[in-house]
Image (cartoon, rainbow, N blue to C red; front, side, top):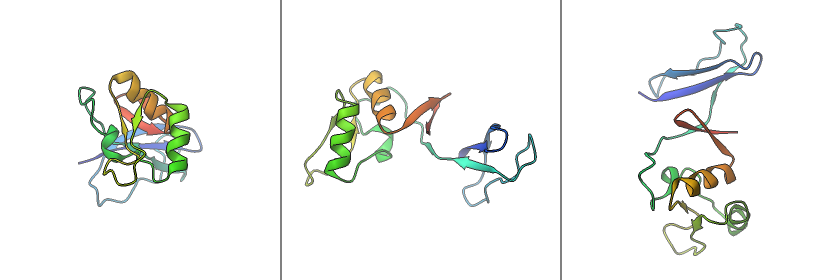
Length: 119
């Protein structure tokens, strides 16, 4: 059963909730009762020992040369294939934890406990 992270736009209350994949998302905030409660997009958790592998299982792969160039400006130490014929085209590869965190930050994510959360 997946763990979903929720956020209330009204009171900023955060909640992590295990739910079946097919279940409807929560909509009422348990803190203030507002109907502005929604799921926050998160990345799957990847053990930090899995270096030299695609970061977050292709979750932050880029589709265009322009996106790759912009990413490389923000995360110059992280390897990314720029060959469109390569099956790893646009997928960042981390050599160490620092590179992984740099890549996630460049893609607009930050760490929240053990999860990765899109800003």
